[in-house]
Structures are given as structure tokens and as C-alpha cells.
Amino acid sequence: MPHDQARQVGTDISPEMDRLAKQAGDDDVIIGPVQECLPRMSEKFDHIMYHQAINFLNTYEVSLVLARYFMLAQNTKVLDYWGR
Image 1 (cartoon, rainbow, N blue to C red):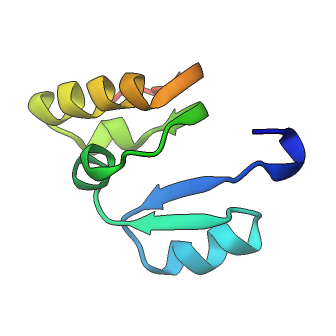
Image 2 (image 1 turned 90 degrees about the vertical axis):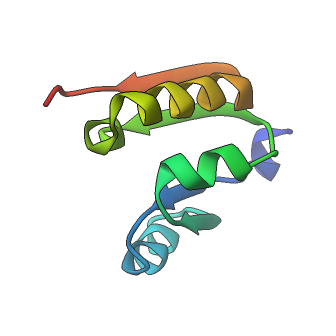
């Protein structure tokens, strides 16, 4: 997709983040736990950035989310993990 047609999609567990993320430039926000939302997504993405939500997942969920994360990202993958 050309950069002038790019879409920015976010996920968050807070419905309030829908409004805030759209104010910040996201085109769409999927509300719900990432470990439930990500497996249901079928859209491929050029770039995926994953920030800190991994801190809230158990070992099984981390494996599930990261596996799906690598399936959906076609080019760049950025994992930002700050530790527990």
C-alpha cells in the first residue's frame, strides 16, 4: 500500500483509548485483550510495533501473541519489552 494510503490500527483494552488513539492519528482501534484480538485478525500489516502489553500476559499467551504477531507482519517487527 502506498504511504499516502497507509492505515494505522491499534489495540487496547480500554474503550477510552479508542477516542484518544483516533485523536493521535490511528484510523482504527480494536478494543479488547491483545491475546483475544490478535488471533482473530486476518489483515496483513507491513509493520507491527508491540509495546509493553507483553508484561501483562502469561507464558502461554506470550507464545500465542508472538506467533500471530510474526504471521501478520510482512516486513518490520518491533518488540518493545521493558521487563517485569
